[in-house]
Length: 322
Length: 315
Image (cartoon, rainbow over all chains, first blue to last red; front, top):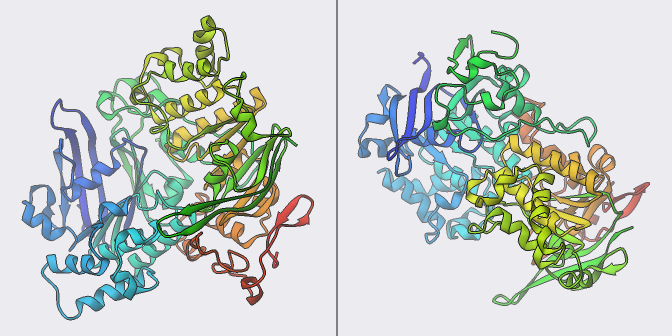
């Protein structure tokens, strides 16, 4: 853990409880104070599980089997339920893809937001106002009416704004976002990204943003971790990942995106095959079966993560050489 | 011209509140056979309603849709007794559009036997043909949908649509639910099939990058109306309607990086309620170029250059 880091995940391993199957393997990353880190990966790459484990929110049947998650000198993985409750919301807040999972459908919004403050022991005369100010900040048009409305009365974009307000209510130092814009229109997505970016800057809040879409994080985060088959295969600054990808998977992902220039009808570069299940990778590189650069070694050995300056890559034959 | 959509209007009545949703308010489209029309717009703009009308799943309240001169509805009604259907639809979510308890082979052969397309002893061969056409291995026949990846499932959905030997394929967000690395493969498959079978596509998406990639013609929809129409070069490289310009600006662009300010330049507000349509130009409430006149005068499409239509007085 470096001096300035707020959260440090070290050698995290996650596995199913029965018939143990590895889902996340040796994941390590740091989030600095005020830093925004993105995690990019496809379904099943382990990005959401890694994030959920930070707050002890893993679904039933899945458990952390190794590693540590250090937040301000505390290992979150060893805290009891009560201690974790104090950290959730207060110090680390989370927003999800579907806001309805975080909002109570039968409780008026004002009451719901005040409950967040109350349940963390801090309700007072100013609380009402605190909620209003925040709803205004996230762009809810008629705050008085909104406080008296139920979640279903809002559009998807508005619900997402409300969830962000709820997450910011207790001024957390770290915001974890699990694909909060995936279900939204591009225009609304852009509004939400601008809102979060602004709110983060104002508070110097750290952020972990999970997504499957590289385009979303290009202008939102400082650093990126690329996950594949349960491991981080490459990490670096946004500049490094987008301009000089080293891992063949990262390069493949980037080139499979249609560009906004050039003509149409050109075939898109695709990565053939489907992602390997993390528990079936065994002693090999998880990407070897789909990789054009793969050699014999890639199928019989796990590539170690090689770190240089600000970036790291887990590949025997990275682009641009070792 | 092959597909003609003429002055189509679609209303939905909400009985409980006695109100009417104006889903489509006068749509005119001519699409030549073999061409691909991309339809783009935010949720609630009527894209999927139009897809349902074109495939004959619903009927318009006004106007008509014809394929090579004959109305779609008759064409499709006849499709069960005659040999084949003209239009087929591919849905967004390959997880919910396949029967989880039906083997892949059966899901495809069902279409062939219902439409009575080949002799009974040839059905099996035809299923294999279709699987190979969409790039799937023959042994997938005996699998169930849950044993397939998202990309494979969407290929099965495409194979099912092709089984009915359509001329026109309506693709409603066909790659939105797929992982990025798989998306490119399915898009390439659609290009190949179009070339091989001479298909006409209507490609519906909220993702302009995909629209740009596959379309010959592009229609931009807002609140049940087409606000801009033209070739893909005209609409995407030289957008004239402020709404199209805003959509293009909102595209996540991975070639611009590390510039948080770029996020702030975006369209404000949301699509208004289709029950109470705004007066004048429906977009004026969110438009940066709106003048007082825009709140009064409704805009119709006018040709600003050859075959480039825009419904905006400021364009």
